[in-house]
Image (tube, rainbow, N blue to C red):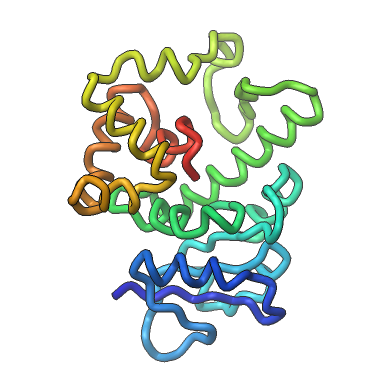
Length: 216
């Protein structure tokens, strides 16, 4: 069983979060001990309270009782979180951070900062649904800034009918774990299929694909 450190000294997280994490197969601990843990979870305002040993694993920040806004996400990313999510999406966020094809911890943290900065830039500019490139961070060619931004529909047009059926199922079920149970298979098998779909759709990884279908 995978071990997960939950730092919640002020008991802000609802019991439903802990229940969902246990149902996803995690062994929860509230204090680090001699045994290693694979990831950590904490409310956004408690990231700074993480013990030093938690700085070497993926940390998921939780916006309690709300959807994380860009400023909250950026503060969490600066403090080292790889994702900032609402309480309903914690288990999936941890699964994505620990997926076999997940980027390195350094890369996950870098992407979290870039995504939060992009969201904040869009909010400040009053722009929605369009990616804002941060060239000093991404080192991308200038031509990408003015290139047309593919829509979700256009990206998924490249998928086969069976692949689209899988994405529809995940969207309906609300998580990879639920979709795997509905199919009678494992999460690993579903993630393997998602990696193939992400490659076909021109996305970076399965995490981007799940965000595209609004499953977080």
